[in-house]
Each structure stands twice: as structure tokens, then as C-alpha cells.
Amino acid sequence: MPKVIENIRETILKTAKNTLLSDGYDKLSLRGVSGQCNIAVGTIYNYFPSKIALITAIMLEDWTVQKDIMQRACANAENVETGIQSIFTNLHEFSLVYQDVWHMAMHSKEVKDEMINGRSRRQMLIEQLAELICELLERFKMPYDSFLPRFIATSLLTYIMEPDFDYEQINKVFKRILYGDTEIYTQRGTV
Image 1 (tube, rainbow, N blue to C red):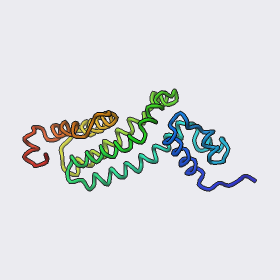
Image 2 (image 1 turned 135 degrees about the horizontal axis):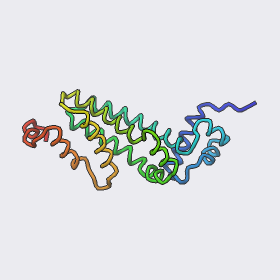
Image 3 (image 1 turned 30 degrees about the vertical axis):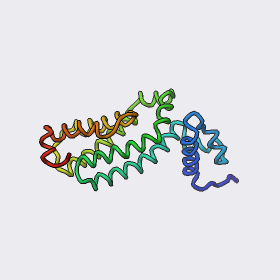
Image 4 (image 1 turned 90 degrees about the vertical axis):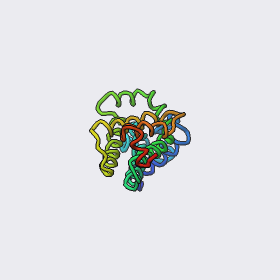
């Protein structure tokens, strides 16, 4: 009779995440996770067909939590700038956790193939961030075209990985785009 393991998917994800964050991308293996979980490697393959699929599931769980936090922060933002800053802050926190994983994964043939075929995860991330930004702009009745939320989302993603970059640098650009002339937003008292 086969043994019944409760919450096996969650156990695999938790174990793999601990290994990934403590030991890094190279040290994570499906065989290692199966040993730590005391299950057969084939059991892991029933849930995750590859190492990349497992890492993607780990990151997606954390991303879902971060996205919910960003949505709440945007809903409670005092203005557009504080909403965008909260997106930046949460995105930065998420990227700090996974930046080494992402850099290592980029050398993987499997990741490169996935990015070439179909819609990349980066494009999906941009779309999700742009949707948050659209909601924020609409909440504060800011006029915008379809390019602006994608531009802001792409800019945030681009600069989030820069080691010497802080939000105030990009905020100056966003203010000029959102409000035009600097005197306009100075008069509104948002500086």
C-alpha cells in the first residue's frame, strides 16, 4: 500500500524554498529536495516537471503575496506618487530575495528557452504592475494613455536591480511625466 503524504506539494515548496534561499540556485536539486522530504524523486516530478518549474512555483507564491500587499498599499495611498513608491518598495523587497536566483537562472538553457518561447514571465509581470498603476491613476483621476502604466512598470523593473539606485531618482521623472512642468506639482504641494 502506497504511503499517503499530507500536503506534499506545500512540503516540497517549503523545503525547496529553504534550500534555494539558503544555499542558492546551483545547490537546489529535485533529488536533494526529495531526500529532505523523504519522498521519491518521481513524486516531485508529479508536481513539478523541472527545477525551473519548482523555482517558478516558489517565486509565484511569494509574488502573489507581494502583489496583494501592493494592491492594498495602492488602495490606501494618499496620492499617485505614494502609490507608485509603495509598488517600488515592495518590488524592491521581492527582488532582493530573489535577485541571486534570477541571475543564476538566466544562465540556464531551460530559462532561456522559456523566455524565447511564448510570452515571457517578465512581460506578464509588467502587465500585472501596469494594471496596478492603471488602477492607481484612475483612482486619482489622472489622465493617461495605455503607454504610461507600461512605461512606469517597465521603468520600475529595470531600475529595481540597479545597486546604486533609489526611488527618488526615478520619482523625479515620474512627476514630470504625470504633472508636466515642475511648477504644477510644486503648486499642488506634492514635493
